Length: 340
Ligand code: KG4
Ligand code: ZN
Image (cartoon, rainbow, N blue to C red; front, side, top):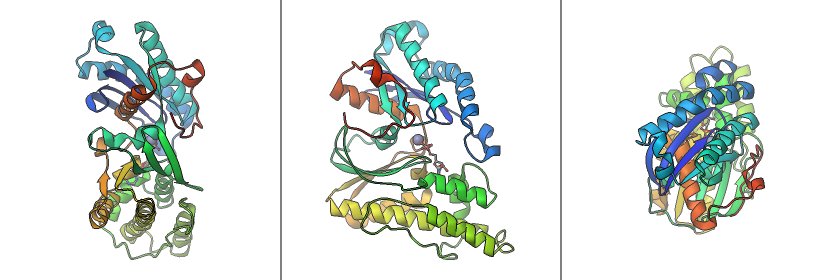
């Protein structure tokens, strides 16, 4: 089954053609980083305008790369999937309108996909061996969620962030350190050259809860900057390494504790922060030590992309079919994870 999938929940306009959930025939990702970087964050109005400009060329390119001419669309594409939420209202609408128009013109079924599920299943694209039950940690700019996947579309949410998401903490830290946006990649790069023990940030383990909280580390960083104004520039690599270490240790500790507590032998990672080099290394090392299989998407599929949406759409239609009510096809910026 070939699915044309669209993803426009935040600041990436993406389209992909995915066959049977894991064979990515094409994936095109148009990033808006240049537009938003001067504001140190995504400006919703600018994001939706950029999606409007980008969506047609991105879809055209994804079809071209998959060797599908518009004239062959009817024969070669079986369904159209799109991100229904959560995300920025205007950005979501652009993807929804585009998907609905294409589906209506070519009389194809529409499959709505939750963006969090996109990240949750992103490691499936390259790892067909994963079978539920497994533990999943979704760590992005908007989410930090620890989820037991009992079956496809059947979830038990163990913990969520009480304040900042992990990626948001990296982005805000980079802003405080006058680095660039998005903060995660630049902090990751600088951290490679620094000493992770140089600054001792407390690890917010929140004992007795599976929730996360990263605003404390962020405030500790702000206080450190204020009380050491002269040292900061010379110490940037060390500060980045210490900050990254605190976040990675917290996520790793809580995830492996949960895997042990619920006796889960597979962990999947997803979301932009799963591109973090220390996090990837630490999960692999801990997985080996604890005999837990670790599955993570390759770097292309960590951040927002439409291939992961096509992957979920395939799994979802296998279980739920292709008929969705009009109410289920309405964009929802604050959509949460729910069972199918
Ligand atoms: O999944 P994503 O593309 O968008 C959301 O759904 O939010 O994630 C973007 C987030 C940003 O906060 C960015 O700073 C973070 O992922 N990120 C990283 C790295 N690469 C991207 N965080 C830490 N280390 C990285 N290498
Ligand atoms: Zn995302």
